[in-house]
Amino acid sequence: MEKVVLKATKRSVIGKQVKALRREGVLPGVVYGYNIEPTAIQMDAREAGRILPKLTSSSMVNIELDGKLIPALVRERQKNYIKGIFTHIDFQAVSLTEKIRTMVTVHLHGVSPAVKDYSAVIVTNMTELEVEALPQYLPERIELDITTLVEIGSAIHVRDIVLGKEVEILSDPDEVLVIATGAADEENTPEVVEGAAEPALVEKKKKEEVK
Image (cartoon, rainbow, N blue to C red; front, side, top):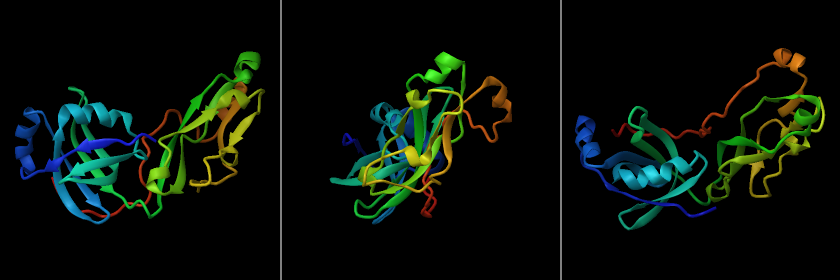
């Protein structure tokens, strides 16, 4: 995984006054978690706007603060969707020697022969998996090849996913991730979830309010 570094400085402006910072091209945020008190920070909005969209909640980023690199995960993003800009970012500092649990997005790729040959419908039952690993080994996303779905009824289960010895999958191995169904069966498939939600940490650490 490419090492991502985001430069930041400590922020003294808080509350409603941060609006002035944003007008100056500064993005406010906070970093909290392992071995650090909740700290208000600020970043160059343009640089952060270039880096943050590429990161998922299981992507590790190094916050460069006071000459030190703080390994962290993006915990929460606030965004002005009208202007298309971030307005506040929360980072959770993590230990590189302690495993954490998180949800990782499942991304489908490839073309299923069942769709081409039998006009099947690919039904997604799970859009993310719960995993446990050291932060530096967390996958940003799980790429799922659906070319193995060759006929109606073909399915991919959690147990079929291999992420390497560094990553343990905690989700039920018997759960179905995706399945190729006939069009008539689609309405009878329970709990179908379309799209992919942004992964979020399962184990949350409490933090002080720093705005």
